[in-house]
Image 1 (cartoon, rainbow, N blue to C red):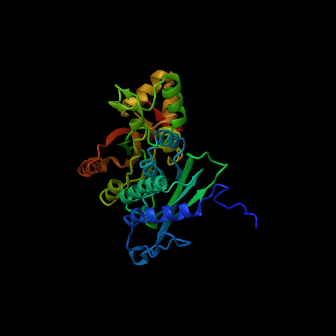
Image 2 (image 1 turned 90 degrees about the vertical axis):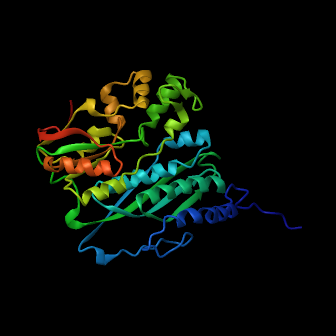
Image 3 (image 1 turned 120 degrees about the vertical axis):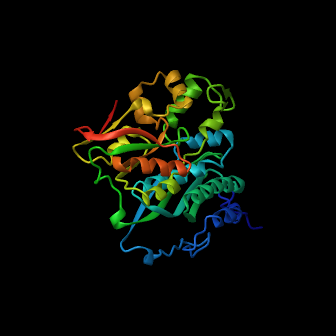
Length: 345
């Protein structure tokens, strides 16, 4: 009698489960479809036919990112339907900074054990994020890596590709003295600073994820899993109405590092610190961790998720337009002459 040999499934990789997962996620990817998409999920590559008649000199802009240790909260709670939104937001907000319209997105999901229902939840979030950003989810990869990740662990990564007319490309080079800095509010921590937030809130303060926190008006898990805001639609519409000379997505490094990335030499972005919406979650972290103001500023967005720099004579029109689009813009600073790229006062 022939001795039975080991199978890939017995080694921890379930190809049949992967096939089921693909079938389960098709309905979510289909909801993101744009007319330019020529392929379906399951092909070796994703096809996107750029409408070249729409542009004279199209420039493709790409961005890639992950979600970081916010994923740990999702894994501890078993709630996987929001971190996909974070993944998309971290990528599309970055390319939006340059004035680019997101066209398509691809994801990479690495898991310890492939559970089709969990994959569907993750892709559902990614698809909802793509829908909000107006881009198509045209492909991705799911890798089952037993022995590398624990059974209930996973990691997410993705990238977005967008397009902008070359003459409309925004890189901060046109920023001038006297320009005004507008902040669009964040929804909370977004997807940055979670290693510090978890250390402070769950170890130093002793909160459990299921604990109702009076200052937050919800339990800790709900607060920490609040998705990153996607700013694509209001910002792209603003670009058709007023001159925008620079933008910054406030992620790791906070305002000091991210605003500095677009500031021309010899100019300073002066930020009025008391204008930042210092949400209760930030106050809790600062209180329980005894975190210094400078550390808070360079770790978290402190309520300002996206910055827009516009000439002063366009300010009123910009604010009015953003309000019409449902935003609550805040004037938080001004461009001045100076050697330091960013100054918080």
